[in-house]
Image (cartoon, rainbow, N blue to C red; front, top):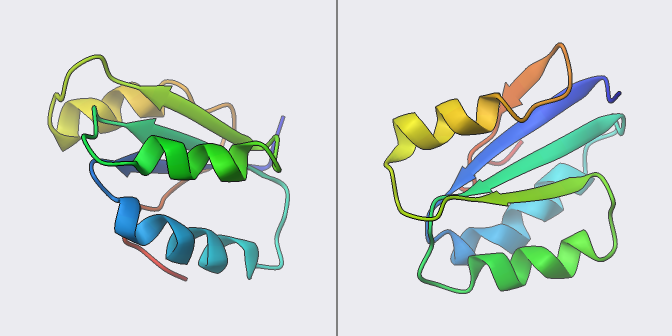
Amino acid sequence: MPSISILTNNYNGSNYIDIFFKSLYSQTFSDWELIFFDNKSTDDSVEKLNKYRKKDKRINLYSNNKNSGLGLARSKALKLCNSDYIAVWDIDDIS
């Protein structure tokens, strides 16, 4: 079990994905899982994310079958986290 789950909700965040991962990978802490929850994006977010998933087994992709809004999508994503600690880090956030 990872020390922390990073919960990321996404809707059409394709323009932010590379910046998001640059920021994520610049962190020194590495015992995490990423719960990437796509809320039925219509852009190429999932395709871009899959490039990173191929290289990193800590990245988990989940998708809504219809856009439900952020509140419900975040609630669904919370249930998928496997750690006692959860960091909410949206697709347009950097650290």
